[in-house]
Image (cartoon, rainbow, N blue to C red; front, side, top):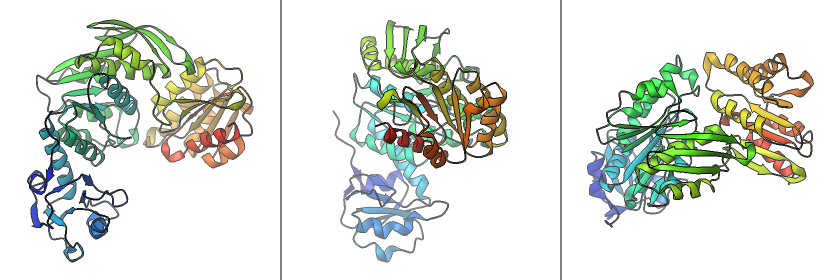
Length: 468
C-alpha cells in the first residue's frame, strides 16, 4: 500500500497556484479546515469569503486555535496578527480549496463514485458505501457535504488513499454540478432521478434535468454511468454519455432490475433482483420503492467493482436509514413514527405517503406534512397535488405545517375527500408539536415529512418524549 499523501507546504502551494509568503517553520499540514470552530491543531486554515463574512478575517483566530498555516487572498492586510505560521496567498480562496482537493484526488489513485439526483442522493451514497465496504476500504462524504465547499473538504480525506470514495453532488443552480465533476473527476457516476426539488430556481423539470446532466461531463470511454431507466428525463440525456451506461429499474427492463416486489410498509421491502452476473433475493428494512431504487443503483455500482451478490444481499438486509431519512421509530403504547423530517420535495413526499398507506397499523394512519421550500411559482400547485395525494392514500388524519402553501395542502386534501375534521393546520412545527402530541393515540402510525426550514423534526422529538 502506498504511503499517505503528505500535505507539504510545497504540495499545497503548487496545487493552489499560491505564493508562500511566510514559512513559520512548518513542513506539512495535518489536514484542511475552513471553520475555526472545528479546526484541529496542525491543520491548514483556508479563509473562504462568504456573502456576509470574509474567512481571512478569522486567520489569527485559526492560528491561535492551532492552525499550522493559512491560505488568504493576495493583498490581505492581516499578516501582522498571524505569528509563526505558514501563509500562502492566492487569487481566490474558494478556487484554491477546490484545486487542492482535485490535486489530492489525482494523487490518491482512489476510485471515485459520484452520485446526483433530486431525491435519494444521501441514501444511495450510504448504501453504495456499505456494499463496497464488503470488499474495499471506502470513505464517503459526511452528512450532506456535497456542495462547492463540502465536496472539496470530503475529498481531502483521500490523503489516506482509500480504495474507493463515494460522494454525492448537490446543486440548486445550473453550473454547480459541472464544477463538482471537475473537482472529483469521478470514475463512476450515478444519476438517481429528476424531481421538483429546487424548482423555484428553474423554469421547468427539463431545466433541472439539464443541470443534473452535468454529471455526464468530462467522461471518457472508461467512465461508467449508473442511470435510472424508470426516469425518462434521465434516460433521454444519458444517450450522450461518452462511457458505458448501466441501467437500473423497479419492475422495468434494465441491467439491474427488481421483480416480484412486495411493499411491506414500515417492515421494508422484498424483491427478486436480476443482474448481469446473476440474481438474488432482496430483503431490506429500508421502506418504500424510492429506497428500493436507491438499493438497485448501489447494487449496480457494487457489481462494477466485483462485490459478490451474496455480500450485497447480506448487507442490504441490515441497512439502516440515515437520521431523519425514513427512520422507523417504535415508541411506547404501540405508537410508530416514520421520521422522514430531514428534507422534502413533492416526489419524495408522495413516496413517503405511499409507504404510510401500505403499512399495517393497529391505530390510525397520520401524515404530518411540512411545507416544501424552493418551489417558486410552482409551489401552490405542487402542494395542492400533495394534499390530494394524501387524501387518496387511505390515511386517517392530515396535519399541514407552514405558510400559505401548507394551507394549500390542507384545503386540497379536504376538497379531495378527507373529512374536514381530520385535516389540521399549524403555522409552525412548535405549534403542531404542542397541540398534536397529546392528540396521538395508542397504536397510531405517524409519518413526519417536511423541508428542513420548517423543522418538522420538532414534532418527532415531541412524540418521542411523550411516548418514551
